[in-house]
Length: 338
Image 1 (spheres, one colour):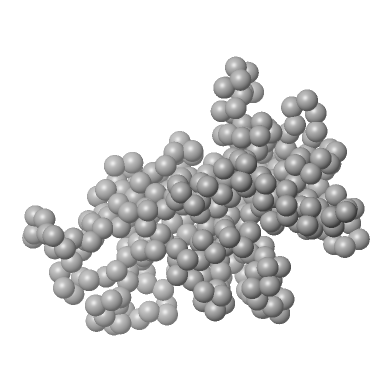
Image 2 (cartoon, rainbow, N blue to C red):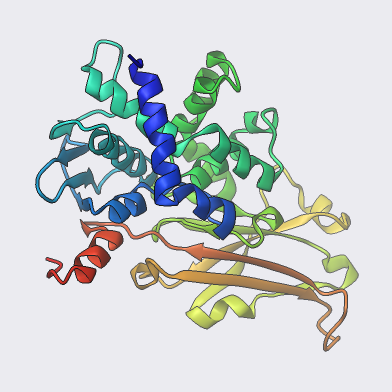
């Protein structure tokens, strides 16, 4: 008889294969496994609602359903949904969860659902794919900024990605413990250069290694774009392409670790820009928004050596209600989406 970890891991591998979730990353440019998307593929309805204590619940009825706490950070919502999917795929009965990280004394089905969730969202192959794309090694992930950005691309919390690396024996538990002592809020503050931001919202840092990908920030998140700075040679980035959807790109003060003198003198320095505008981004939820910038000398109409930066952003919805995938599923089946 298989132990619960082996069983949960095998079922997670089957789900990734059979639903096509892993193929979306390998072939389509997505960076994370989307548990809400998997739920929709399987016909499991997902409802986001605010709860005081409850993180999530699974209901096994004629139409199975999942509830997740809409007031929690995005990474925790993903992990909660994956945990509840574990109950579904592993054949468990209905359950409500105030926690999703259970200790060794918890009920077997809760520990099994936990292990399924981590195997689904943070498998070795998924982590390796993202790390290759970004040029990150295990050593560079000891930089809290890189670890935080990895957590966003994988779609789990900063603490969850740190402990996932330990679970996979990619680093020691001492490493995970040390990294989780650093508050993500401090990392966000260093990126934005200010303290006035909503703590539960994330700050994405996009750079040239995010080319041709589909990134999935929440509609509430901030996006910083780091581009090479060749201004001393007369090259400037034309940022008009992003303005067609009502967004604006404005320069952001360089992080404190890069002095202004260094920024101006180095031909290989970088400059940060903040994506602003569209205070109500909810209309973009579920849409893929291309971001494309061109670097050229303003006095030249077109040059063969123009540099381009292209990526895409698929804003993830936030707030209460049925998930977008659940609504689509209901519409396809001809049922009213209440």
